[in-house]
Image 1: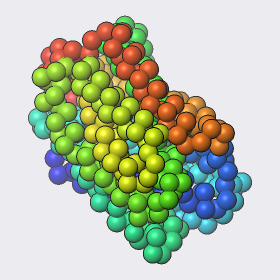
Image 2: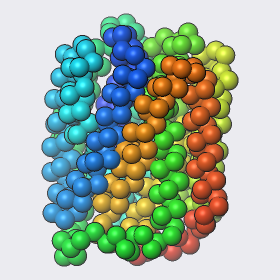
Image 3: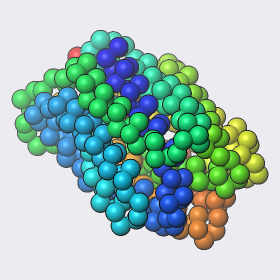
Image 4: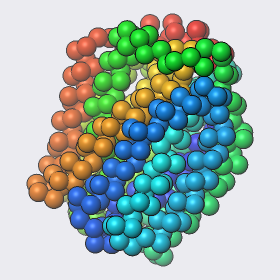
Length: 387
């Protein structure tokens, strides 16, 4: 519990130091909306191309912890390179390098933590919520710090934390590798699992809306007149409300079923994005960010745990990588540049109206294509205990 919690605390603390402010920093450098969208699309592009193959390699070789450590060091060094880049043409290859190191971190960490949670009979959400707490605190604090100093200070700060993260990865437990992990990925078994296919499809659609959210929310806040401190408060408040949502995700699934829990999460997302679209003032937008935090907490903790339960034995990291490649890779590779085009041509309100309608589409797919019942969540858990 301690090993997983402190890893998430450090990882998302580093993420909060730069992610909420990166698009604003690019905007201050004079980059256009499509250029910001393209730079933001590098991470999902790398996720789509690299997350699943690297996670599969970790499953085959039992290299989860060495890869986590190596990629953490790579992210730290890449952050220092980003600090030195000042133009779009220089930022493009540097951000691509960072994205390559970043892409396997989440699926490797989530599969490792989910396996540890099953092995020791603790809640995955109880470990992951420490990441949301760290994100909330760091986003709020850094908003004031970067306003006082400069946005460039966020890069060495994040780099230092990523180097600490490499050391903290030693506190995790390596996922057990079985002989069958050396064979091919069981695509047929995955495709025949209707619950899994529906879950991945709806997650892909919602991931497209999240791509717009993560790229343009900070810029929209400054458009409404908010400064760096309000950007930090908004992201921090959103992350703070992820905590109760993540902690309550497992009890909700046991009581309501995975499908209903995810539909509640999607409803929170839609409320936040449609609220953003009509917000006249920065403080109104901050209020709607509460729904964003509740939605993400329920969505992410429930999705990761369901995928762990539904994954063929010894292929947990691979399936987490596929989910990340689809929802945080391909979907955002499409939505981030598209969001930039909508933002420049129709304005921020239209951008978030499109994001809200995208979430509604994801809810329709999940609601019409079959039930993610408590059976598919709870009754499969004993089969994966000890992974």
